[in-house]
Length: 152
Image (cartoon, rainbow, N blue to C red; front, side):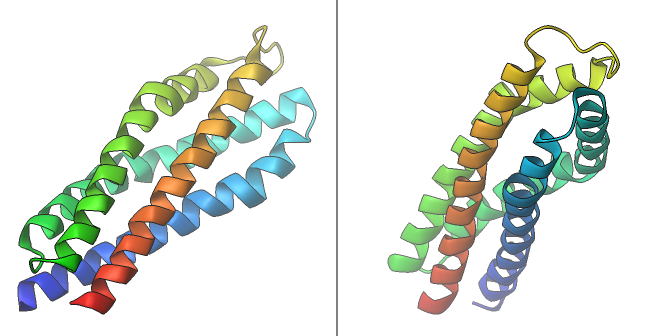
C-alpha cells in the first residue's frame, strides 16, 4: 500500500501541475496572444512552443505511463476504476496531441512571422479548439487523481 500511496501522490502532483500549466496557457495566455498583430502573434506562439516543447514531450507521456501503472497497482474497487478512467483519458489526450496539436505546432515553428502562410489563422484556431479538449482531459486526470486519493 505504501508504494501505491507514493505513486498516486506523485501522479496527483504531476496531473495538477500539467492541468495548471496547460489550462493557464489555453484560457489566460492564448486569448491575449490571439489579439496581437500577425507578426508578434506568430513570434509569441513560436516562443511558447519552444518553451512548452522542452517540457511537455517528457511530462505528458511520463504522467500517462504512471497513470496506467497506478491503475494496475491501485486497490480493487472504486480506486482502480477511477484510475482506469484516468488512463482512458490519458490515451485520448495523447492521441489528440500526436494527431492534431503536434503537427500544427511543427508547422507553426516553420513559419516566417513577417510573411505567414495562407490559412495560418485557421491552423491556430484548430489548435486552440483541440487544446481546450486537451485541457478538459487533463482536468479529468486531475479529478480522478484527487478522487482516487480520497478513496484509498
